[in-house]
Length: 285
Image (tube, rainbow, N blue to C red; front, side):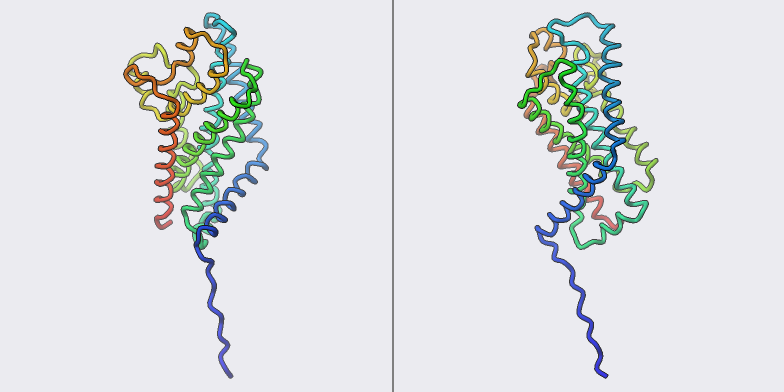
């Protein structure tokens, strides 16, 4: 009897179109996860409400009045947006830890697609989720005296997505070798919380002690928070003396860093984090 020949297994080619499809699949999975987790959006909205209207009102009562209605709540609004983007993007990478614990990550890594595509899909998904979730905070602009200007909202979306991309890449880099959710959350909080509080999100960067001012200049998140505030304050009628206190920008030895350069630094940091995350995933898992 003649032997039955088994046809050789066909492995899909790893072309650009194939990898782009993998990016789309990973991105779609992140969006489905976001759409089915309404509790996360509710919790983030509650936290933002607490920061802006409870803490902002309470600490604002301790500060002297500011002309033209620019109070602490208005100042904190862009800072809270930045905090929401940073935290959401960072902790969106926790899905990698879950996928590793349940074995789904190994199935993705052995799939005939580039690991760069998998990492890029995860980072892109985290950035998009962070942007969409932060739009809920943007919707409260009118409650703090910020106009619903289309140019302002478009500028915020651009800055939020860029910040989310960088922080999502950092989160993926951290989560790449984590084997438990507790370890990831501990490392993430230890890395993010000091940087976030030293970014100027919750207080002006003027009149700080010398050591703290130096730390804010070395903090990469400072260059993500300041553009968000500059976009908002550019659409407010703020006297120069008030702007000098609430939105002076970031300066290096007296030279004010342009917003374009700040965004370039944030984007460059995101690309570096992405490259490091890809390199870590390319190692044997």
